Length: 428
Ligand SMILES: Cc1cc2nc3c(=O)[nH]c(=O)nc-3n(C[C@H](O)[C@H](O)[C@H](O)COP(=O)(O)OP(=O)(O)OC[C@H]3O[C@@H](n4cnc5c(N)ncnc54)[C@H](O)[C@@H]3O)c2cc1C
Image (cartoon, rainbow, N blue to C red; front, side, top):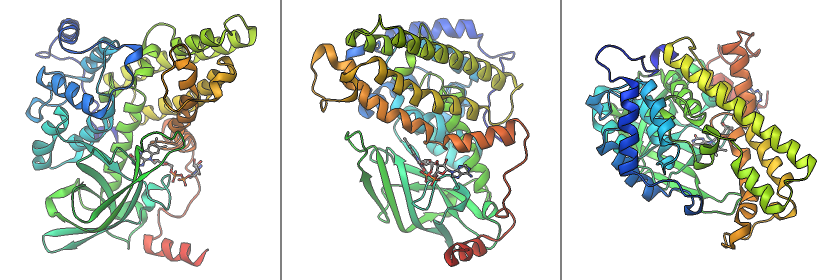
């Protein structure tokens, strides 16, 4: 699959020297972007769009994208350098899905018309894309999607339902996986489409999450959504390949490698340099547990995990850049995060004392803010073990595609999807 993805290339003659690029990035960021400040809170979507436009106008958006699509025409090595330099600045993290996952997928598989129309807008943050993959019937079995697209003259007509969509309230387009041929095995009858979310046939409903915050998850109902034939992304019935490319970029971006370098959440900045656990140390200080031997041991455990994650991330990034690592290495990093993040959440609860298990509905009470916020972090830390494919699915990928172990036994790769459905309906 990697042969079809934008893995980027190493510096070659005519490409800007990376150290010269580093100096240029450093000067640009210092002059153009606000520095991170612990008290200033997460970046909102409105701020993200402004920041992305600043990056784009300065020539630092889509660093490894071709210049004809609005990118900087450089390599993933330059993107890495950019990420290192950007660690101390407020970055357009809420646009990571659109810029670092959907845009590279469109670059890999979109038609020339889709790429030249949409990529410059996405890279500037003027247009936001998201992924319409998961369905109420289940997300792990992505090839089992029930949403269908039927050809009608010059159009496609899409019907179905998607769920757990992050950021549908801000987005303009969804990359939507739909079944176009139910009479072939399930992976062979899928196609990917660009769906404008403002279409009359798209109804978007929020899902309230357990952290009680503003909804960031949505469910979409697609009723007779008519799409021009040109909204097909990739080849007809080859949507599985496009979906895999999307997941490849998602896992890389989640792990902070590939095109996502520099776009990770603020909380990760500490992990990029220094102890990697500054937030947990602050939490222990606020709770007065820094002298407690058990708390110290737990902090050391989190520190070791952060250092190892950073080093493995650097190694994978180098492997992707040089071509030594081909395939789903982002899954290994994503699995590491899916294990580390919930554990880090538990450690925060342990070192943060009793105050860390409650929160005060966003009231700003000064000294205890880190403690109050941790309980929400503990809740949300679990999401990384599910989003973009659960830990179990990453383990399957690592074992089958990286370690070359045998595939899980199943007959659903050979049986026509329609027959699978009737079996499911009959309960067999
Ligand atoms: C924060 C967050 C953001 C998300 N954003 C999006 C988004 O923008 N767009 C989108 O389309 N989706 C999104 N999702 C949905 C996500 O992709 C799915 O939740 C995920 O793929 C799992 O699907 P599911 O929840 O339906 O669980 P299921 O697929 O029903 O799985 C249930 C359990 O069974 C296990 N399981 C299933 N199959 C296997 C197997 N073969 N081997 C071993 N174990 C198995 C799973 O690991 C899991 O523990 C998001 C989810 C989260 C948490």
